[in-house]
Image (tube, rainbow, N blue to C red; front, top):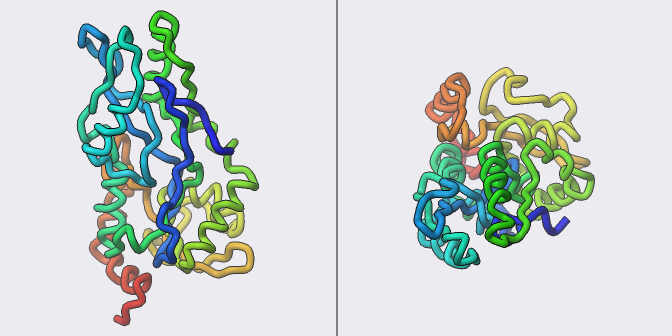
Length: 267
């Protein structure tokens, strides 16, 4: 599946994959891709939509580089009568990628060049807020002669986790040459790890948070490190103080030990 919908103003929803294919120390599995967001204003400068996804993120767990974001937004073709799009500020682009770096990778002393990133669904999916923005875009579609736009919703992601996608993920793990798999949140556990290790359920099924576990995928053995999603760790949107507390305790008490194991440093 090489295309999964179209963003407002016509950009295709592109597949986002790992670019650096050299061997890595750890394989990190997230849920689905983010996107480049804009603020959409009418020709008279009043705001039509405060935050709207209009292009695929340029890399996995994109950190929202403002120069890169502005360059991408300049390439979006908006009919003159439909107004214009502008950079909406740093908060709306790349918060999950920044949290991954700060709250997950930094405690493990793992720079991005030493990890392989992957999503369960390597395309952007629309959450509740973006579905609302899409509905507003559709209201302006006919009077402004705008192209069709449809991004599949987050609640349909399981439809794309078919056998072909599972095989792609396994091939990426093999290519990464890592024996360590870091999962972010419950969904990589439920929709991938559990397929091969049925005893594994959700994060709250583990006795202790942030411990390494021995698992098998097909005939290969790996060390699994299940962690909360960067949205939780970075307090992005709704989050749970209970899991934040567990994660912060792990950062202070266990992350260094696990980092040494992943990096092959003798203690």
